[in-house]
Amino acid sequence: MKRVATLLVLLSIHLSAFATWSIIIIDPKTGEIGIAGASCTHSCRGIARIAPGKGAIVVQAMSNSDARKKGLQMIIDHRSPEEIIQALRAPEFDPERQQYAIVSTKYLDTPMTYTGKATTSYTGALTAKGVSVQGNTLASARELKAIMDAVVNGQNDQLSINEILMRALEAGSEAGGDKRCGEQRATCAFLMVAKPDDKPGKLYMDLEFFGQKRGGMNAVHLLRGKYEKWKRKHSV
Image (cartoon, rainbow, N blue to C red; front, side, top):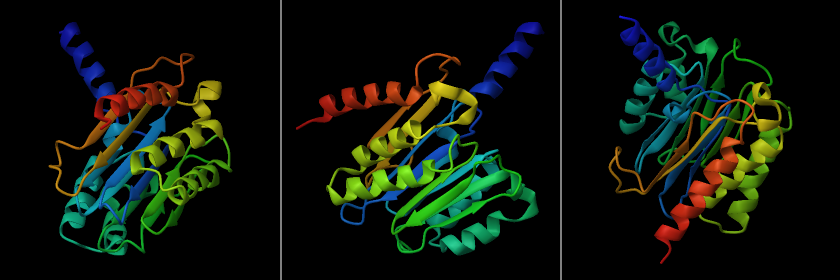
């Protein structure tokens, strides 16, 4: 029984999907959709879902899985980000403990976010056409702007969506990251990109680093290493 109990505890930890800062980007030229995020928790990839060719959702802070499923289906059904946020603010999803972000290919000009009143400060979000940047438990109020600036600069330089996401994730780390991690900044990080014809369970890029111990290396830096290996493997 002890072994079973221990296994269940470890499984629940592994399936946790909390996150501190994340970025959603849709590239209007290629139709690619990408999400990156990081946190001072065991794992955070579970906060994000992409409907290839249609849009993406992040449900972070306490990361309610039912809200994520509901939002993703509404994206697939071409509902507007405003409608989706309104639906996810229903009491059953415990919205005041959540942080939502929705970006849709059909409603590219109007990404939407919602930050619950019970999320941990510093918390907030910034949006632009096809872009949403959001965070909670941040070490610095300037993190969100630093992340958005990295996105804008990358777009101006016509970088790939995956490179922009990686740089934006690093900008959040450099600006303070998750305040619970101190100088380490993050213990987990992920980066995913879907092409328009990808299957939901088989994305063009799906990288993560999780389970880093407190006081160890910054997971964002470790993810950069995985990303560089991916680039070498996929270079033409």
